Image 1 (cartoon, rainbow, N blue to C red):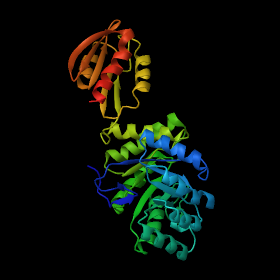
Image 2: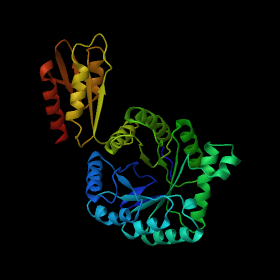
Image 3: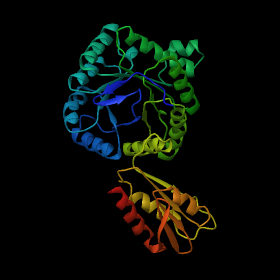
Image 4: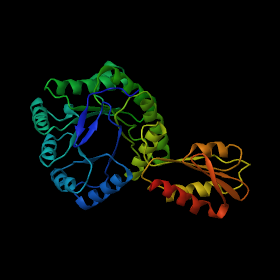
Length: 351
């Protein structure tokens, strides 16, 4: 069961409580290059991104938020490092959320200015502590980088906002080390009821980063911990959304899009299953509704799995059996499998 947290809103998107888990990404364009940034955000939207974050490194980036926001359909978060004026400018130009560390913004007066502006516009603040940004005091107190030093470093930042009567807070505790990330989020979940932003920071290139993210984020989500996620890959940001959606679908937390069930192949396989699955995945990636498609390579386990799917095929020697909702509907030649599969899936998707 999902852990109950406070609810915050990024634009019109609620996070926490009983609300669906959202998927985020971050642009890798120069934010002030509005054409490139808007184009990338639109690609992210098309892939299923719910919230986007942009780096605000200077005043031009902050001012660009107004034009970007006018042409996109999802909330936008400004990622601020150190410069409190850029946080205030981002708020002025219409940002929906801030990602800051109050402790590195400067004096309490500066933090108060940011909090006042956020309160006036109902803008949440995400407090992010990474394993590489733990306050020295806590590294010394808790003997280095570990869950305690991460959590208590974050709690200091949270307390600073709470003392200013600000509670629209989201927390992240990311590390590139998966067990450390799991332990840190689990500890925080027992200590505060703010919504949690899950991620494995600097997870790496697409293949390795996907595995690390799936293990770490999936483990936490399976325990009901987590309200929004970001997959941090050294890859096209669209890939982050695809991975995030698959993690949620695999846990039954997202009922949208295509789910392909396919066997790993063995000596009984008599059709070119790998090629068929790869091509089917490409041609069906834009399916809107939730659909389970089974593509099985032999008549042993194939029929049983295929019957459980909305559409299923079980391969034989040059021919396959088509199932729809558990019923055999036809038999087709191997060379016609893909065209027939696409036709049957689209028929259901358009109902």
